[in-house]
Image (cartoon, rainbow over all chains, first blue to last red; front, side):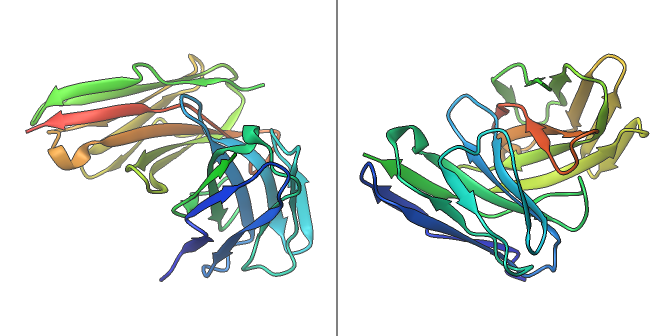
Amino acid sequence: NAGVTQTPKFQVLKTGQSMTLQCAQDMNHEYMSWYRQDPGMGLRLIHYSVGAGITDQGEVPNGYNVSRSTTEDFPLRLLSAAPSQTSVYFCASSYGINEKLFFGSGTQLSVL
Amino acid sequence: KQEVTQIPAALSVPEGENLVLNCSFTDSAIYNLQWFRQDPGKGLTSLLLIQSSQREQTSGRLNASLDKSSGRSTLYIAASQPGDSATYLCAVGALYNFNKFYFGSGTKLNVKP
């Protein structure tokens, strides 16, 4: 099983550029979420989805957009990249509410 | 807002030692708590999940306990091995905000051969 797949693994952007981080899961999980991990801090929730067509904001949503058109995919869009968005981004999924989380391997993003 | 703290930030022990990692949280109204392992450059792997009604969960050499009233959880690792070296994170599932987990910043464990 592939589990949760994130692409790309590494990305360098210039300030003001936009891009989409891809996340796909093959476990038929309803719940998907995006986190960012910064040095010395725990993971912080950006956006989450409880099913296709349903998304909501987490702790740090500003500067990011999400959509959920299928159960499998949950892309994260950076609208206009800023140096403060330099971070490691993780996508996670779970079968049900607050159940065991399965994580992708992460995307390391640098914004210059 | 729920605050999750893990102390110490780093821990180094000799192989074979039993050890305890700590996790504390400020709001006892939790849905559940998960312990994760993170290897360098990798994603997180869920080790144990404790529901709010449970006191502990065990998996192999790992035992996690939960004391909601005091806002604490511990992860006990028996007979540590070099392969246990990793960062261990705890995450608290919010009771009134479903599907929101609040993470600690982790304890980096080094088990010396």
